[in-house]
Length: 286
Image (cartoon, rainbow, N blue to C red; front, side, top):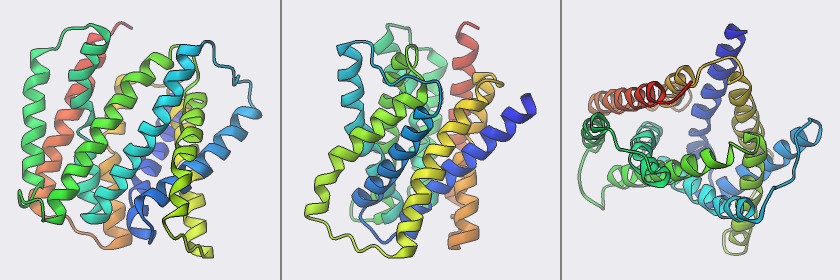
């Protein structure tokens, strides 16, 4: 069973890493890419929930309001993520986004009235130094600097999603939460079709379907299934491989070769996020 869980989570993380490449493969605005992603992901998740034993019912008004508010936040998170990749590179987008666990260890105690661990402050500085190394020039007009900022913004918003989803996951399946958020994100992004031109062909439509169904809905399902067999600490460490897989796939498919400073900075960011995840799990009750 553990071996099955490891295979499922490795497949899920590989697909999450692959998703970043679509910012380069699709010739659309990040708004349209995310619209396609959440639309097809929402349909797929809806079908999975319909043919399973999961319930659609939201228990109270407060939960419904929270679910509705997280949809737009998810949309903004993914738009920032793909914007980062489009104007810089897959490596910079994935690595700067990977700072989200560090944001989480600072904001989560504030929301849940917990103490901030001193060692997490040190890990945050390690992560920031990694970000410094992957940033070639601190100049707003430099596209890679803009990419880092958008990636950090994607990490910050994903941190808030993680924190609020922690509260919801105590009552609802992660698949149900993801469905509602994808559905609301779709509604929020639909108006962009009125001012952005969308010229679909068979290739771009197939890529959007693949992004939404395989890299999002299926990956999410595999990740949740793997958690039945694995400890959260194991899952957190394996999840840190997402940028590694993404950068490797970008090299193989797109021919993107990250600079040596980007690799070193990325290793520092990954080291900080892995240690944050490990310490967080050790501090939590079994």
